[in-house]
Image (cartoon, rainbow, N blue to C red; front, side, top):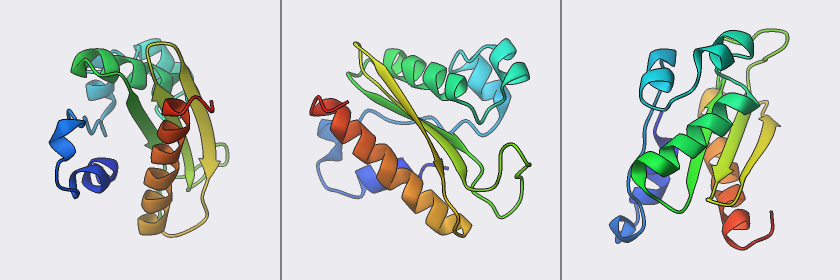
Length: 133
């Protein structure tokens, strides 16, 4: 976890616009820190549209930022199921006005799935900021 934060903070001056991140592998962190409801986690699971929607909205409020990104997925090589296969990733980007979600299905190894997740998450954020979403 934390690859999106790495991509952002590897650039000098990132502290001018980047507040921080939460890597919430465990559902208890999603619930207690990010306010994802136990009902959501028990009914649709951590890798779901509703979970990333709740995570993004909470992170934006907690960090008092204009925008937030949330990601939950199965990067591989293990952990997939027939309904949530390896490479399935939900991404949410949130502003005060709206939260946009999108599901992706990557078919590569773990490292490449993580890279593609970060690239697509940052691109969704870019589109939201530019008013294209």
